[in-house]
Image (tube, rainbow, N blue to C red; front, side, top):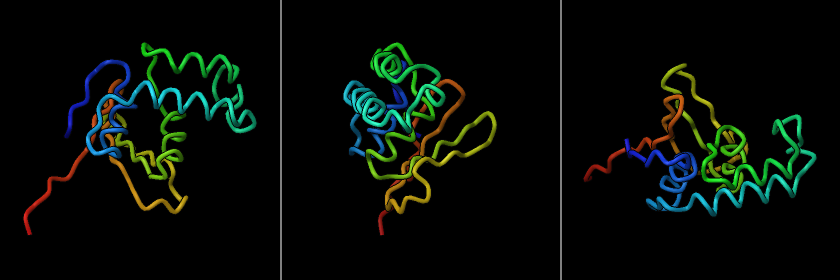
Amino acid sequence: RRVIDADNSCLFNAVAYALEAGARDRAPTLRETVAAVVLSAPGRWCEAVLGKPPEEYAEWIQDSQHWGGGIELAILADHYEAELAAFDCQSLRVDVFGQGQGYLKRALLIYDGIHYDVLVRPAYPE
């Protein structure tokens, strides 16, 4: 387990850590990416999916005080062309975003109900 700072941006930083060689400071950029995707595809990312109009959601998600969740994981899976598997410690459920897309990478995230960390496999010498 790689612990990610509990700063309301743990989802973004956990994904970046897993897929960008340990990066921990990419949240603002990834929030902008999510906002841009939402605004570029209003048919897919409509008010019924987002819970608010796309323009309002795009502004909302760029505020560092707001948490990300399934919507952001779905968008980031496509952005990184990677499956994002979120293991929910409370429900014992695994949600895999980007599944079935043919992506060759997979990041493993641990979700405890309010926070995301990264699940890693230690490298063992051959």
